[in-house]
Length: 56
Image (cartoon, rainbow, N blue to C red; front, top):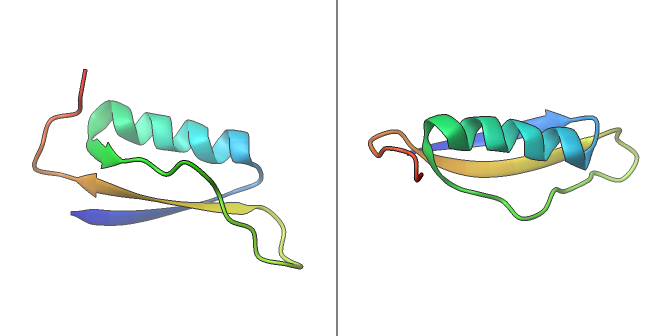
């Protein structure tokens, strides 16, 4: 298992990165991003299982 935190400029970019990861690995996807007050951009955390094949 691996936890991946994506820092991106916006939600669209963060979810696009998550989709790229999902194409290669089995993941537990995030359904929302988080924002830090006063900080630019968003963060998204998802979890990868490197031992399993991605779902089709």
